[in-house]
Image (cartoon, rainbow, N blue to C red; front, side, top):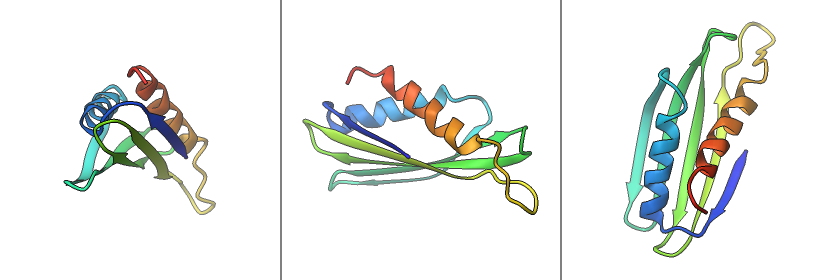
Length: 106
């Protein structure tokens, strides 16, 4: 799980999330999105991994206001076979997202 406190407003954080997701690679697809005026932004993405021949999903939740925000991301799925082996895909997806988010000034 990725949990980030940011000294950026929610609108800036949403732009940072979109840019970070775009930089995760060409196999990323947006599976769903929810935006609420009450300071909530949820984005669910899927990324295909050849090593497991399956998709991993990343659920990103951003909450906040004009001054500060919190971003939480949780990866799921990606297992393959009877034993549901993910070969580290979930951790890799979360780490890649964290690294891309670090490129934002927070």
